[in-house]
View 1 (cartoon, rainbow, N blue to C red):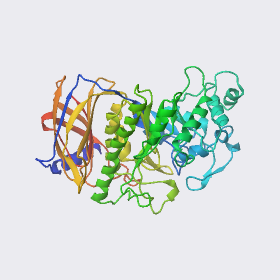
View 2: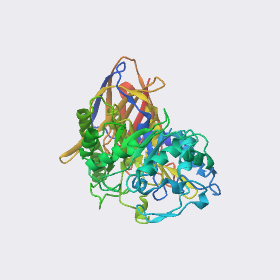
View 3: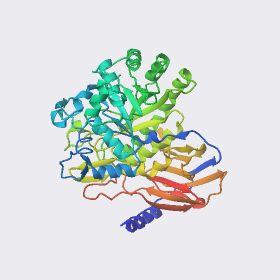
View 4: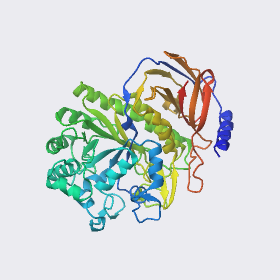
Length: 510
């Protein structure tokens, strides 16, 4: 099967047209020079109580016929382990600011059933709560990012949740956690003080939220060495006011400011665009819109540089990804969408941008992990399929905790009318294993590129790794054909390095 796919892609590569004049890419770097660490948490995931993102997607219960480990479906666990998921954000999203943690602890059959008013008006059984979340991330070998309820909660509620999770001594809350089956405190890497305070988290002004953050964070306490990084709820899209106001007005107990950005092909929330069977114009619009995040991050980082020149406050893109129109046969509140080669390219473009800003951008979370928006995994009862985005995460896992290497790239433009993006973007880094890695993404769906490398500091002759590409722009995996699009082996002499149209390539330089 693998051999057949390799042969098929070899034929595909041979058939891809190259524009000898316009599509020549030059990359220059010194392998002895180093940039900031590419933090593993840039590859974080987001799991919200939304549609089938948690229930069925992750949690099926211990009595399910679907093979599971203590209620967590084995196929999903194994798949997520394979891409080395470093971090999971939970329980939202908008859901977080209506989530009351006490409703998700204790015996599952005694937990209250609520209505998820944000997402589809479905029943929320609360069978996946605090203990289940931490067991899930521990089974994955990942870290936890917990989002607290600022919008409809209270200072006391949030402070008590922190004590319940982290308390070491014999307080009533710590003993309650032990009674519920967890002797040792939970480890929390990040804790968010609310979510999207500008919208579903309370429709607040940044000045008002900054005062609330100062109040709430004052009472968030944990034993020495156990305090998570605290995240302030920041802005979105082109808005920099939240980053500006928060970094000016919160002087303590702030480790980072969050930021949200979604890629909509049509830049219209009422007419986002289709997930499949789209035109090349929609492909281009998707690439152009996703590439805007580079300018938006730069603008926000400029505010941080001005207000926090020492670099103490990081910038966390804790929701990002593609968002399309709901599929006609699906509940629109479940945000289920198909995932294609276009999404894989979008993911890789964003990774390269995050790497370029790795000094301040040290954590991001794609929205979302399973069955929601730009998912890694889609499920249908006992069936599971891995998406092209999943495979991009797998290819890029060599960049987790790698050391970036500064480089210069000269790429032609992929252009429509008066809008353009670079045809090819890249990343260069030295992995934790000491190996030198290069990632290349070709956003142009029609034209390949010749890549010329000028490297100092190391002698390299071959590029060996993987490639993800296909003939169709909306190539995808389905439950009937789950292996239609997967990475295959890629190898080339450096003096003959070519990449096809609409492709993602990650190689070791040998």
